[in-house]
Length: 162
Image (cartoon, rainbow, N blue to C red; front, side, top):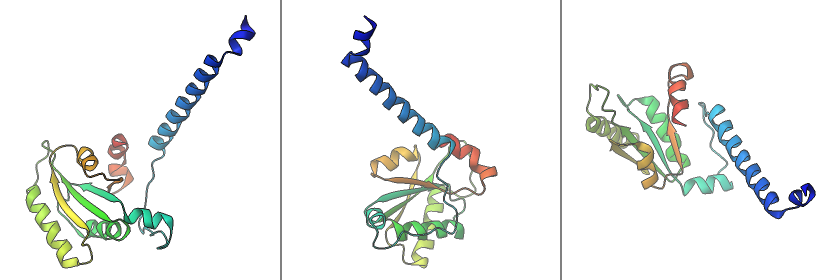
């Protein structure tokens, strides 16, 4: 009886499915515990590489409050604009926060910075009042970037976003 159960194809399929599910969960847990953190200075992939060609076809989102926009933001935007085909800077609106400058004004300041900087022709600036990840999905973004000041200051909050 026991040998016929162990030889059952249904049992083998169930075991394979459970192993696949366990592997997927393990990968997700690993990504949450050990996120990919890219530190400055960032390196571009070689121009003729498969990665570079793939990136040039991609749309990415850089999310933040940009309160106020500054040169650190501009450095990140330059890097993303050089690496990816389309960059969308999303100025998030948190209704629970008070801002000295309106989101629309911050967007205008950032647009002016990009015009004066030049070379970022593939960058757009949007004000998003809902969930930015939902907006990113509507734009078919392949990656979602956020800048943090330090891991101690912002890392805990960023980890909960994963």
